[in-house]
Amino acid sequence: MPELPEVETTAVALAADVLGRRILAVEKLDHPPMIEDLDPSTFAARVRGRRIEAVTRRAKWILIRLDEGLTLAVHLRMTGILRAAPASEAPDTHTHLVLGLDDGSRIFFRDSRKFGRVRLLDAAGLAQLDAAHGIEPLSEAFSAEALEAILHGRRTRLKPLLLDQTQVAGIGNIYADEALHEARLHPLRPADSLEPDEVKRLHQSVRSVLERGVRRKARYWDGPVRAHEDFDEFAVYDRAGEPCKTCGTAIARITVAQRGTHFCPGCQPER
DNA sequence: CATTACCTGCAA
DNA sequence: TTGCAGGTAATG
Image 1 (cartoon, rainbow, N blue to C red):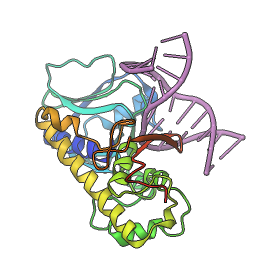
Image 2 (tube, rainbow, N blue to C red):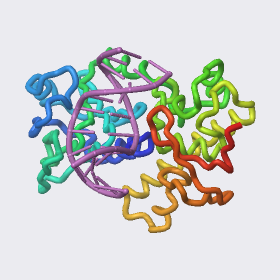
Image 3 (tube, chains in turn red, yellow, cyan):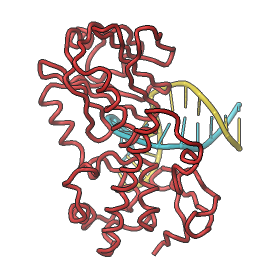
């Protein structure tokens, strides 16, 4: 599932392929609800002729900056894949948006579950998207003190808090479980119950699991990863019943805020 | 705060 | 054949 590391890597890879290209036409758009707030023909008309000036990331949004002050914002949700495709490649049935570029290559947005979304934003819309999201966990601003301020006075459990995009941006179900495990914190701990050293551990673990994720995905983009690296990708996610690598206790799986939540009862005691 | 809708692939 | 997977918006 695309979370911050996957979205970041997608943006970097796309930038390398499409920077400076001009969009000639929307060549396919067979799932109109994918485009938010615009009908397909208006979307096509506004996008046609625009030059791609930058591709960046904010939270789990890929931001394709166009000329004339427009930004194409793409959210992959669960199953979205955004990439540049060579002129020779034909889109498959799950590719619902195709943008033709001036060098013959194309941008494919493939999404089997059709949860993905596209917004065409002006400056105000972009500012709104930015304001709707919390701090970037890989930014300088994300200090232990900043995390403490987010945790302070909130009775929410740690797991839902980490998933709340308005507080910390970009963490999803997988990396939330991984960060809590590395910090040795139970997912149901109330946010405002953490001791100072626990806040520091969580701050460090959020950064490190995301940084490792970005590095791993970047490597994956360049070629096949080694088998053991694939196997060891996560410590707790999707490992219910398997022994914890640290203490040997069987990894548990519970439901928290409607999400599958994996943790080690040995390393992450309830209290 | 919790629940449901949005979708489809895939495992049970 | 059923139900689960999960990001987010909309809705009780």
